[in-house]
Image (cartoon, rainbow, N blue to C red):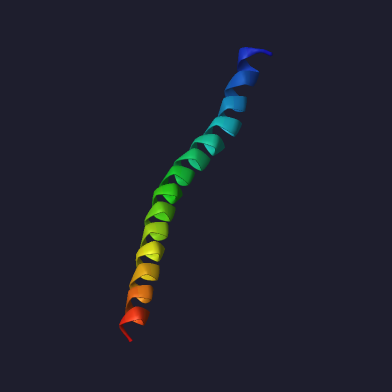
Length: 52
């Protein structure tokens, strides 16, 4: 593989891989926060049902 073939390959594959990695790490933190919020909401609902 010549050097000229390697540069477009990196451009065509490296950029989408980097963008995917970046978005997945951002979404992962949001998903963890959402999971925590759902767990808190579930506990609040159970506590509310026990009071009535």
